Length: 56
Image (cartoon, rainbow, N blue to C red; front, side):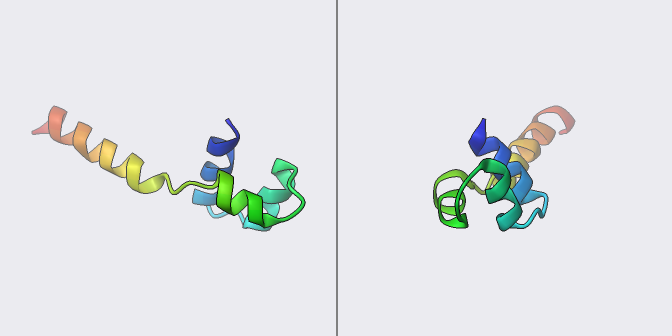
């Protein structure tokens, strides 16, 4: 859940400093290196694949 929380907030444009505080981290290093994942490319690829399956 923490990975999703951090990743979704990051992808929505919330500053990493704010996310780090919300996640209870002392600084942004752990937030950036451990928890933040780039999920938009994966979500977009999945959505495009589903569109191709259902709307082609």
